[in-house]
Length: 183
Image 1 (cartoon, rainbow, N blue to C red):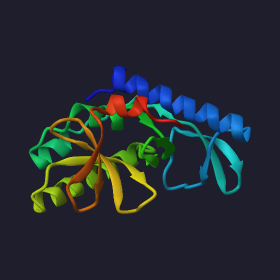
Image 2 (cartoon, one colour; image 1 turned 180 degrees about the horizontal axis):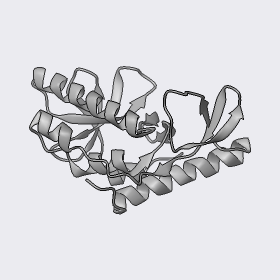
Image 3 (cartoon, rainbow, N blue to C red; image 1 turned 180 degrees about the vertical axis):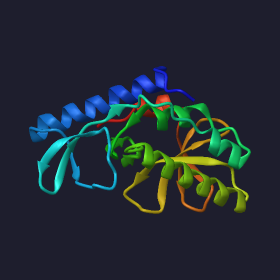
Image 4 (cartoon, rainbow, N blue to C red; image 1 turned 90 degrees about the vertical axis):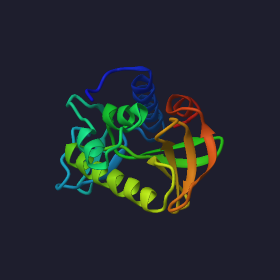
């Protein structure tokens, strides 16, 4: 799926830009992340100090797709999760919503996107083994066992404990969920 600027993609871009603006106003510089020579990313915007790099989310210009994941799983992934993970390269972004604090996950670079695909395959295989509905994770919470995921059938956003069925619906769609987030 080629990255297109649809409503969901536009919301992601705007949210990531508001995150950067807020971070810069509070800290006087771009967000920072640990230097990692193994993971070259277009997000890197220079060095903050010898151990930390400055970074900012960037729109993905590559054509990233999930056809290999879909073929391996014999499953069509919900279009919202495909758009979510193929719109921007970014480090994780901390956010909040009425339900609490969370960390949005994004691919940092093409190599990280490949790793993300492997993790999605592992997650779906676990859900199948447990005979549970298929969800795709996209965010973490303060509790390491609790994630936010998209129901692959409906596109709804749910809270779920890893290894269990989702237990709390938080939004009807990814777009609705992103509209309620604060950076």
